[in-house]
Length: 122
Image (cartoon, rainbow, N blue to C red):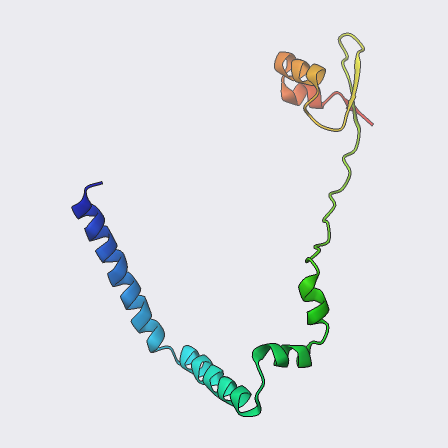
């Protein structure tokens, strides 16, 4: 990409961002949030508190959680069930939990997936 093309592209992106900024400046919801934040910071300064102090007051356990690593619960998947395939041509049996079995792949290549899936016995 030439320098001129890159310049024009960046210029367009800047114009789009400036337009978005103007839209946000006129957003009443954003104005309310800014006003709230300003008043909150003034109130905190008046009483000599920081945001951290307020958080500790509202949620005292956050201090103990902050140093500890966040442990997410493991989402366990349902265990796969064993499928038993019996080849009617030679009587060979294959037991597998997945479709990545060597013999099963060979059967599917030779006879077709739908035919081999009909060989599943419970």
